[in-house]
Figure (cartoon, rainbow, N blue to C red):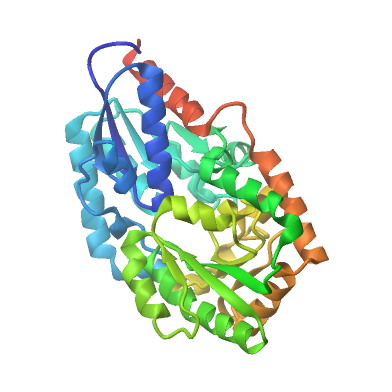
Length: 393
């Protein structure tokens, strides 16, 4: 793959986590190919820092819940068509769609129809093992490879007739911030809470819908903890595009959280926290790998609740699925009850069997996700292999 011509890569990434995966992939592609990477498509701040001039704001394609999709359907359909036409006209060496399957895979299908010669790789396996297993086979005509973050996903794709899947590992297992936070947690394990203050991380999600659904209940939980005699230090890491909403919703709290936008500071407070109250999602895995005991929560919109019968997986928490046993307590919809959350947090903040069991589970999760090389390097190797196969080089 050596040469002087830039490697033309089209990329579609909608969420913060996907944007980070994309940035890791681009850096690894540049190192592995020895070529400049020319970026085209849709992405956030991390990909833009590597030279991507995004076609439009990616926040618009990372909406949460079926109800939100229905409300925004005309705009989403327009953006899918806009992105697909632009990518097909650009004629990249490869299209990589990252997560957000409701958007990215539709773009992939249109690009494949317009130009079948463009190899297409999807990064982050859709949760076909959790709901909608028929979606696996539907991906096969327009996705050449799926890069899987979870070790059980390639076998599930094969069982369901989906595209070939390859476990590349999870970037979080090698994150310097997470590794540093985990080390600080180990160092302070024997000297926690000597001042009687519980350091609580509040993590309501990175999407507007999540924040609106969860942060009021998290505020009530904080109030109950205070009423029950707990002295609290509140830390709330978030991302820039929901920061104003977070400030608005926490403005009336009696205990004001420190709102954190800086990544370095985020990992610093992960190393200082006693316990976390978090939205279900990638952040729960970040916490597990950083060895911060947590309670996981999620509130679906009304339409998604009607479809709950389609969900086949036994847990919606990534740490639990990877460990293949209940490690993290999880509460959904009407069971996101501040009184219960407050008592769970007290349990996990204390020196307790519950806390010890979570920490043991976190060690098993880290072991299950480990790979011999960084995930970005493995992913880059697969993307380059697809480009070579299509080009005949």
